[in-house]
Figure 1 (cartoon, helix red, strand yellow):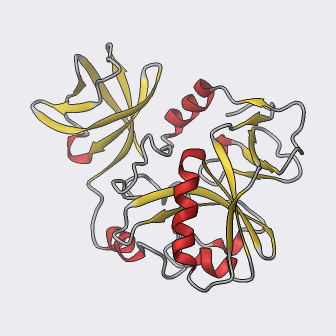
Figure 2 (cartoon, rainbow, N blue to C red):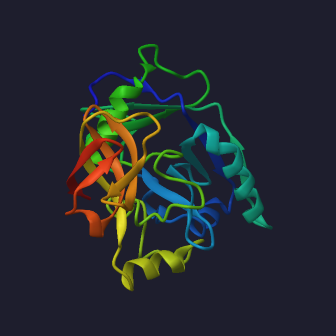
Length: 264
């Protein structure tokens, strides 16, 4: 878990969605129900009509007609363009703000919201303009990656791949990132069918590494068959995308052996 220090997430930005139709607009697009976004942080995704991942983000209601979206900075421009395509005649404005995203652990200060994906990820707090506390420092990458691997939390553009990832295989139900009761959203039919009519055959798991793995080694093998891919590593542990039928078989990446630890 994060400590009591206030950390800045430099790779995150805030997008504002405002206007009389802002709630209706977002509610009909994203995977989660925004009904409680005034009192708690909502984790959600935007999908293609075929149900594949485009973006993941956090949503919080700032005022009656304004929502802030906490999103990976390299995704923001494309995200804004896509939202503008969906606007049609709705009374909505979408723009990038000068906001800052901060995180911390332990007791949440006023104005902070706990991360809905897992309580061990601490809380998130948003500051607009120059209203940034002087004690805030940049979050060390290794600290966050250790937490992500420990909890098997997929990250934008690392494990979560645009137009490739299916959010249920990425654990969005466990991470409180999808609602099955809110009604329609883009990609909803495919997502609902995956949950109700099929059993997931692959997804993210936590593994232990025994041996040395080169930076370019990503393919997980079970004998001569490709069983999955290795992603974020921290020390001897990693997040792996694995076909579940290979969980109980010998696994390796390059010359290193992998031990399956947990299916989330």
